[in-house]
Amino acid sequence: MDTVPARGHQGGGLAPVVHRGVPEGQERQVAALYWEAFGRKLGPALDPPEVGREFIASHLHRDRGVTALSGGRTVAVAGYQLGGRGLTGGGVGDVLSAYGLFRGLPRLAVLALFERTPAPGELVMDGIAVDPAHRGMGIGGRLLREIARVAEESGCRRIRLDVIDTNPRARALYERHGFTAVHTEKTPYLRRLMGFGAVTTMHRPVGTAADGGSR
Figure 1 (spheres, one colour):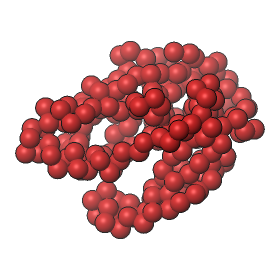
Figure 2 (figure 1 turned 180 degrees about the horizontal axis):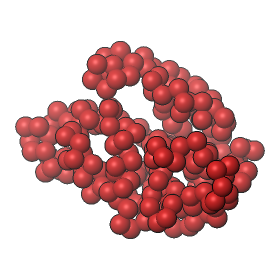
Figure 3 (figure 1 turned 90 degrees about the vertical axis):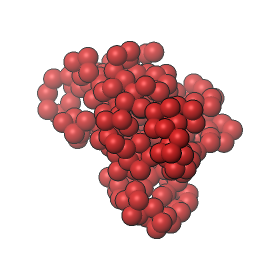
Figure 4 (figure 1 turned 180 degrees about the vertical axis):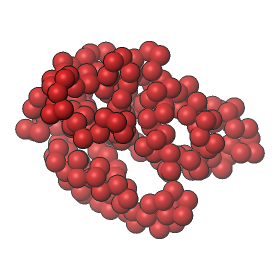
């Protein structure tokens, strides 16, 4: 797991340090960040929140994420899928063990909606979660650049992600870093359940000028 030197930011002092992987002992903090960012979407599958956060923490693949650390604490995380594994794990047996057969089966059906299999030569991002107190510092862009380096070092030709229609700030961030929309799927049947009505798939080639810049 590598770290990337920090630089100062407009507010003065040192910016959080970007780190490849989830440091040991930070699993629950990463799960809390993920739940804060994606809880509305994850809730139907993993509620109640305390159980969902514990499930995420217990099944993390720590080598499938890029984190930003401040004072030894994870303040941002970006997960990705590569080589058949993503940041968040847990299979059928794990879900049934955590929630029981009766409650677990419908949750598996909801989780199946989130499954995205990378195409050959493709790294799939799972999203970015930044602690509210550290937003506006450019951390999301730094995580994106580091994931682009991971993709390039892994021989990938492009990065793929999905962004929902209720998160225009995330889409704007991705567009600033070289992602372009390639397809939008209307999902009105998910608006009441998960709070969004469309999902846009975005692609970004690996090895572009956007991969550079400060670390």
